[in-house]
Length: 62
Image (cartoon, rainbow, N blue to C red):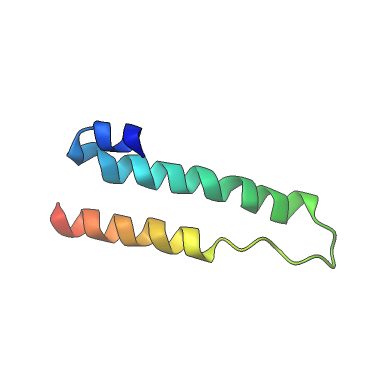
């Protein structure tokens, strides 16, 4: 969190979006390649919702 706050304000939304996307990618990989057919997929809806919300806010400001 300190590294995020030390970055310029204009970069923070992009940095946070990148971090959330990186957190989502391994979950999607495990769900698509590493789980048994009868195991539930790892959920990524909350992470995707956060990414979508940040991107909407960024586009509204731009």
